[in-house]
Amino acid sequence: MKLLIAGIALFLIVETNARWINFPIEAIQGGHDMWRAYSDMREANTIGADKFFHAKGNADAASRGEGGKWAAEVISNGREWVQEKMGHGAEDSAADQRANEHGRNGGDPNVFRPAGLPPCSSESHED
View 1 (tube, helix red, strand yellow):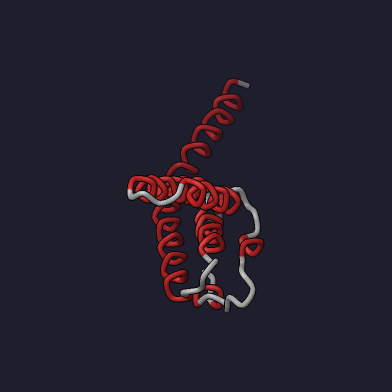
View 2: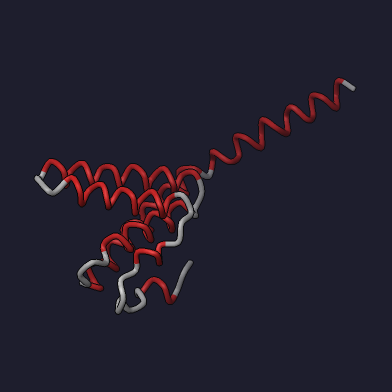
């Protein structure tokens, strides 16, 4: 009986730690997803599309796991902090953060997609 309990405890400890081994990998992949969304936004050069790309980058990163979600939050908050310090409007920053959180929490980024925005280059070859 003691051996069984010890085995179950060991399994739970190893399983919990195994998930955290993936955290740095997910964070790096999430950072890449955020950069890809930024690059797609620059390439699209479409007025009113920034909220879509905020939501898309956060959604893609968060889909990687806890590390990706963490990276998306850190990058998004850092970007908005810098924008705020540069004098950009608080209202636009709050709207960006709503789009960021929407994507990070599993919401569909397409609710922010403006009419006429063509598919992104990354939408044709998801990894």
